[in-house]
Image 1 (tube, helix red, strand yellow):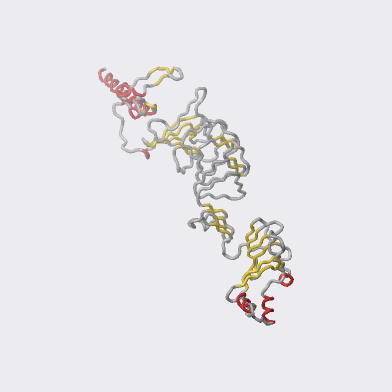
Image 2 (cartoon, one colour):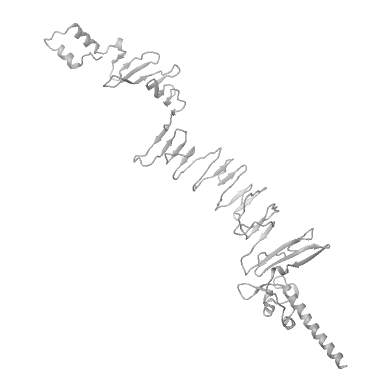
Length: 427
């Protein structure tokens, strides 16, 4: 090919008056395409393209060489393997692009594409990358490990999306789903099952929530909540971690709690099955009311307390409703180990004489009763009264009257003894 003459050289040999040699005629013939030898033909007809025949088992059509050193770089053929037929572009015997004739499937690096676009990744190269026009963001990438990144060129999971994501249809996840940032789902979500058009979240199977779950709408588990029910559960419910309730809790049916229940004392690690801690001086920690029968029934089957209550201001404990000798008894902690600055009561009889017992009718129940007026007692024995935010008392401890009565009886007994001694001395 290096000795072949170009068109300019041949034109000089065949110009008017020239005498071309046999070699010149050979060069002229070899420089022209021959239908029989070269397999290239221009069929007659304006709409007929150039006709090219193939060669060999691979039905080779065209080889491409470099201009300078005559190195073979690319080949176009129609049958890279015995089982495939199509248009193939290869280099070094390896297919780089193949369009299958029967299916129209496009293969990159593969000669048997099984999809409309089939990419055979090799080495550490990314399989696919699509950049935006500015090149400052990577809209889509598939790396060498098959990880898909959207908005990132370094995906850390099978699907790694950076930025807002909108899914208008159904999203089906058969294995684990990890969400590290905020996610907003405006449609219906089904886990283990398909949600109906009215179900925002439907879960079938065991569900574990390790972190915080915040739901602003209504939730029904095993049932459908009403318009006034934020959470409605039908069936057994297991909560392995802490359950925090900041507002009202309403229980309409039987509820069994096998663990510890703590109200108002987060983080408390005591052994009490039920602990209630209040922080409002104007209201009691627990208020129980029953207009038909007993409000609270507590039973202890051994000489221990059925109900234990602790007051931290002032410090003290109250143990009530324990069983002793088959009878219910009431007791209050009074150990010297809990007290300091101990001193005797003064003027107990004078104080008791100022306290007035009364008969009255409760406004709410219209039941007649006897007792004290707490505000009146508080004027003389303030330790016995707890006040609310207004001037009215919220509770009264009748136990505080007992020490006063004991000391008043002692004072009265001493007065009686003095009178008896005076009478005997005058006889």
